[in-house]
Length: 288
Image 1 (cartoon, rainbow, N blue to C red):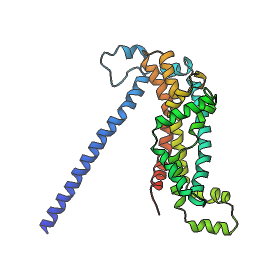
Image 2: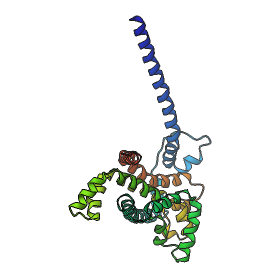
Image 3: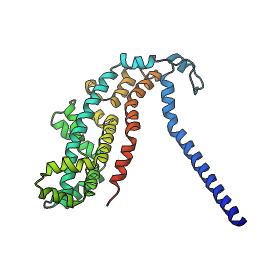
Image 4: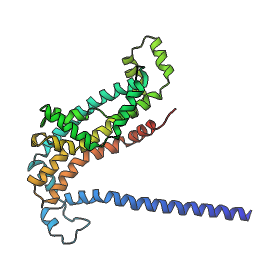
């Protein structure tokens, strides 16, 4: 009995030590990951003078100021970049959702000749490097005369092979007998899609919407390539424009204030919907 109690205590002590080590390492990693965000926010509240007077950067500020945020929206066209990004994000996400929902439904429920071959070719597109796709899209959009237009910004982003695949896998988890029963009752494919499949797969659909919004908000290479008119710049490109022709390279606090203002919507969006994102992604990876 004493040996049992001794072994039990050793096991419990080992478990406590393991948890302590794990949580300590996770805490250290969390600090490393979050420190750049802390430094960005801290710098945005420092005045230009106090920031430049720090020979050794300080981890705090005794005189925070909102002036940098005021400058970010008054001295440069950050509001215009926000509006452009909002238009681009909403239209692109809506069009992409229409495309991938119908494509996923066709691949998961409809029967047509060459379906498996077409889907295999679709998946093979994921193997093509983004750089090659961007070059092709740039040539196509330029030939169509759509540079410096919202149409040129939006068109290459209205579909996604990965999202089609993710949604198709979710649709296929719905029993096929349910589809056959609906067809016997005279339910059309569209009605079955919108009344049955989409509500059941709502977590994945919400996840795709959120991930697409984040992708559009952070988009940099394509907008920078296809637009050289500041009237069509998105927030990601606007930051570079602000740095070069707005505050200048020296006014780091004002730049950080602009970056924080741009980052806040995405951070809030993720904090609100992070559980749905995790649920949707995990559902997409589960069969049966």
